[in-house]
Amino acid sequence: MNPKRGLMGLFILLFFLSSITLALLVLDDQKDMSSRASISLVGGLQPALPTEKLVPNESVWDGRLHDLPVIIRYNPALWFPPDKDAPVFYHLGQSTTARIIVGSVTLGELRQILGSDFVAPQFLGTPRTNLENWNIQSYSFHFLGEEKIVDVWIGSGGISLVAVMSDDSTRREVGDLASQTTYVEIGKVQGDSTPDDSARLAAQMRPSVVMILNNFCAQANFSGKAYPFCLAQAGSGFFVNKDGYIATNGHVVGNLPETSIFNAVTTGGLDGLLVDSLQAYYSVQMGSLVDKTLVETKVKEAHAKKEAIYQIAGLIGQMYKKNLITLESAESHYFIQLGNTPIQLSKTGINSGSGIVTATLIASDYAEPDSVLGFSTSDVALLKINGTNFPALSLGNLTDVGVGSGLLLVGFPGVAMGSNSQLLDTSANAEPTFTKGVVSAFKQAKGNKKNLIQTDASINHGNSGGPAVSTDGKVVGLATYGLTPDEGGGNYNFLRDIGDLKELMVKNNVTADMGETYAIWKSGLNNYWISYFKSAKADFERVLSLYPDHPTASRYLNEATSKTGSLEDKTPRFTRAQRQLYIGASSGLMIFSVMIIVVLGVSNYIDSKRRRAPVILPPRAPLPPRPIQTF
Image (cartoon, rainbow, N blue to C red; front, side):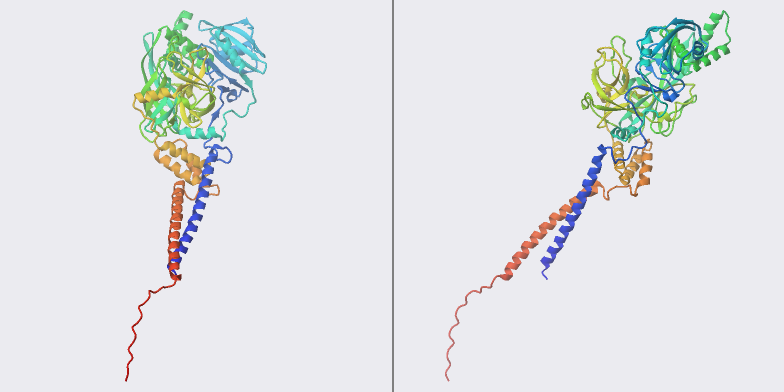
């Protein structure tokens, strides 16, 4: 047997085997690429876990949380929404409250709602309103020596608004609330999730967004006596560097005296001051010293009636503006909620441990804007926590979005708690909310003309400092509550330009080093959504090894582990890197086989030619004649 022909057959077989292997690998790679491309489509993908909470674009208060069949759209720059205790809005600029109740209100019921501190009611008439299906009955009451106007807005749908005002200047804003009231059936509450691009983007961003708690302690001085108190106000932030640098708004880490006093009064932190000041007031009114225990009872009753405690807070605020009350020894401590354990505030302090860490303020570019001149700074700040491998987000640019571009805003529910509060809420604050919106316009801040992004996405108190992300996952701004543009009037939802934050980072030598945790987390989610559970499991395990406090990786890991190896698991036999290696090897074997086959073929052809050609011998010289022998 010709050995060269045997080798040719072997390499021909190797060629065909390599070709088949290459074809199978290419088909598998194309199928994998097609699966990954399908992430941009909704159908056939696994939903995000846990279900991310997407809220509507508008600033909406859902009365069904209080068993009231209404939804009210409100301007968050003007109104502080009701808390979980009572359905009462508070006007941020004036001492005005608006309570939502079911049914009409008689004078007796009105006195019961307001409490015993509202006395001497008088009917003022029925002011005119341009709102259809609404009527107003107006009264005057005396509250701690001051006259208050109380409007009862009666709606044809069976809902009434009780507004307590210092004067009628805010009647129009109350009317705006009434006009934005929509009657609904009590049932499912808004904020359900959808397995669309926004839900997947929200799942990617969730671990990078944190709650920031500013624990502010100070001392109020009144009539030579000190009243120490502590507050905790919450905001949002996000990682901008793998080494623990967190971005937020400047006003989240700062404390305005007027706001601090208001929160301290309404949450019980300054009850001692209230008791002493009210005792002095009632003693003057009665002409003799009033028993302190009676005043303490009055303060407790005021806390039970939102209208009363809000009006008292307004009076204390006026005393501060007149320098009758001063603040001293102000100090802030910052806490970061990384995981799923909510921050708890009690009389003994703030819980710490796994998932809740302390932070240091690195820098802040924020000063209270002048009412005439406007802003002299931006509203950005940097905090730092110890550690590394945190999932930093990618920072974009203002030019990455245009008018109409989609945005996703992330932040935690707003909370302001006092030292008498037992909890800083619980599960509701463990998870952020995600709000979809679009870029409405580009503006400039009054004063320093810094860039602002106007959006229709709602920005509430707790959202402040949270990231606003474009559809390609880049942070283009920071949610900043209630700014006023230079031209025109009114208040709008605005984002601070990410460029302001970048400037602050450069000044403090902070780079935008994302690290590897976010990339691996994103890879794991992509694998999970296309049912590559085995690959997703490996990614989630890697994420947890890098960042043990990751808030959602464990849940995804448990889900991926339970489905690994099942019929649902569509993980390819080889990873993409392995496929590329094998495709390269198969292609190389094919080329090598072809080369050897050609070489052997040419060599065998030459050999066969040699065997078939006739042999031509050279001519020989004639032999000499042999002599004849004779005998």
